[in-house]
Image (cartoon, rainbow over all chains, first blue to last red; front, side):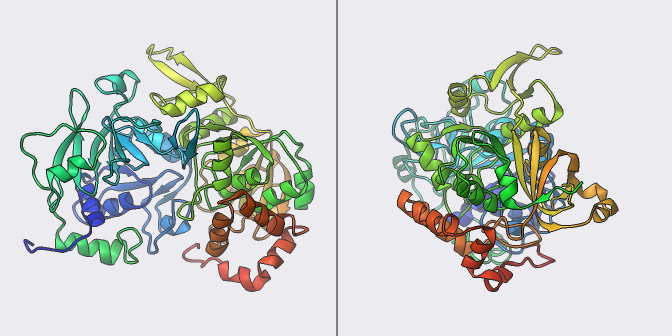
Length: 256
Length: 299
């Protein structure tokens, strides 16, 4: 403890994600960094977290890294193997998911996410993966955490297509649409953001060590709310970095 | 009742213009041998549906057999995009009703349970919903909760003409076991007018009767049973074989361009008479035995 430890931006993001999770929570995750963050939390401060994959998997203990949710490597030693209706229906739509992790092509000042297309929806566009369970998680989880690379083209004033709603156009719009919860955090490789309780605009919470306020603001497509005092993000501990490298992602597939 | 037929006979039962629910999820339990045979028989104008787009739908779209797709988005996981589906959407050659995973499975579920509609929290406030209201205006409506007065989005039930489901174990009547997660497959089968079961292993009904709690497909819903090993290749079948990473990479690369897709189809679909010739073309048992699943790991 207390000693400086070398880490990658990815590892810092995974640790920041893990810190958002409380013991006993039910977490809906896709693949990649959210899985690393959730397994890290489960192996440190939150051993009683329940991990859920949309296609019907609860609490797997993979020993090999998978290429996606469709890879049996990520189902290994699960406690439950069931169905969409069971997971996204009874667990998520039934109101039992505390936290959902989401990523995307782009997000905006109100935490709306686009995973569907880039370009003009009515004209020339490039089509991508679409929703999967992302829209469902964004609609029914008690809160969501967005993990996204810190680039101007990914952090926009308004996304070109809302696949998964955040606070829509701000204020009370999300509640008026009949949706509970909403995004609580946005974790990038330069900073962590929250949302203003009234306007629901993205608000800078902390800057990662080694980054400056100018760098954070100059590399995003809108101006977030910037409080007078913005602390640095707490860096990972040596033990957290060790667990990621030796136990969770030894092949360096996600963290490399 | 013995419903065991060849793949060719089962596929021939599907008229052009049918709505086919497919069992694949990205790169696992995708109905690949089925999709190839549909293309060889020249069946056209299909509507295909599944909760998460998979390689089976991509091959059917790439071969020009599909005019409409209902799905919740999808990919080849880290191997890449569903290039044929994405290209067809971008060029407007198919109509895509894009849902979320849960809204698709709720439509199947309503169809399975014989409900007139199912309310859902998903899709509200999204452009996904706005797009659906344009391409499928009769698939959804708003209803008032009769108990609280709250306004809900309601989805129309979905009843495909036929579900085509890859399973690990089935008997000649079509009673089937699916090992591993089952995503939307049970609801697809129960919502569809009939089901074609494609199984890796064919067992006597006596085996099914010994562990009937494992049965997820009811035999009476099944019209045809096809016993065909490696029929989901190159996708995986949990506890039977792993995905063929090299072949999926080859597919992902080929499908990046229409010319590449054409060459892939000419070699692996139209260049072979049937699934057995396809397996020989891959390298036969010498190649396939390397994909066999470890009994403890399941892959």
